[in-house]
Length: 110
Image 1 (spheres, one colour):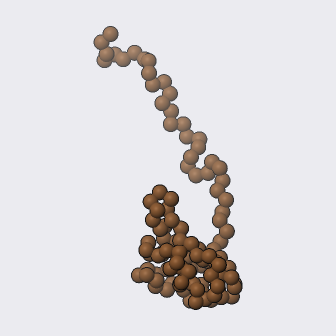
Image 2 (tube, rainbow, N blue to C red):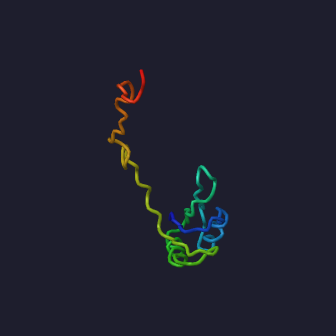
Image 3 (cartoon, rainbow, N blue to C red):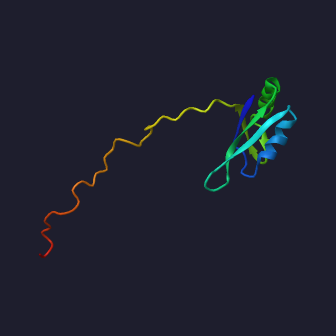
């Protein structure tokens, strides 16, 4: 079972997550997601537990628990949604600039 953990303290690392969830069953993987630019934790991570029943027990017991000074949220991880091309506020708006040069300026002395 793949488990999503949010509201993690920025000091929590992969080993901490592994230790936290190890008492519930065999941890296949534990990963805190890091920001690419700063290298700092993004405050969430994923743990995969081999046994689904034990994974559900971990979710039930750890969701809303305090860990490293913060109340964490623990849920079943949902599959990542595909991002569509051209979505959001990106395309279609012409910022123009159009005809920027050239014209006659009455304030200028020729």
